[in-house]
Length: 321
Image (cartoon, rainbow, N blue to C red; front, top):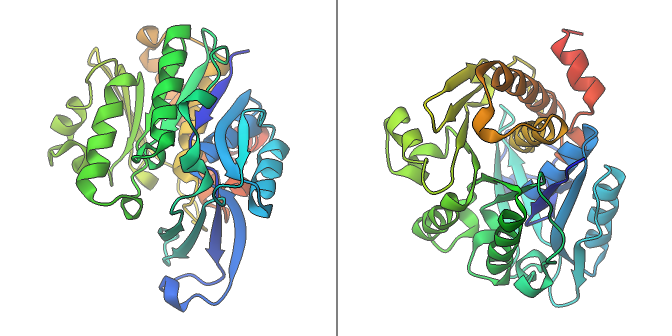
């Protein structure tokens, strides 16, 4: 079986005990494992896929907690490095009444930012593998160049590259730096997942079709456009468009829902491999239906990794149980 590798940040999300208040008004938090690339690896593994996480954590209790959480989800953590040069990243979250959230990050620097390109192994990737990354660790730090190295080696091995920008502007010195980094890495990807909240910011276009069309640069073959509860649409370079409505659930916390969605897509891609250029409407509909269900289940539960569903959960949901 192929492996889904993810690279980037794993961190601690501190989830507030109360919804609907600003972060400064929150009095207590619950510790939860998070970080989009770590979430995606756990999403794949909890569905029964083979997943591995590449990153660096602090030699601290929070790092221990994250390793144990990922390992407990079934993720291969043999490529997780530890350092005493910086602490594991922390993110404090405030939840709005609708389950959406705001973040305050503590990482200046954090351990994930110190992953170096010479720490990326040359023999890790094989043909059929997938490598997934996000934009948080594309900041000007050693980890950015570790991403370049990993992507280069994965591409050389014949792996598929997946990119979810997952924009978090508070982590950047300015919005333009974030946008510039995303456009630097976009052409290196085969699959791009982007949300309705990010589309105009990243592309500069207000018109949806024009914006999505502008993402087909370099090696991009497929763009997956998520619309939250409204579902998702899949656009292929050859002009194929497939839309799938979302699922209505009572939202507890949207943290990790997008990661669950792309994790489910990657699980489907590696459990039933098919050349990207040969994906047809029927297969794409099947993948989107499955990924929408995984995301809905995640949003209906608090937390990120703990909220990710297992395969029987998704199958039961799809059956209406």
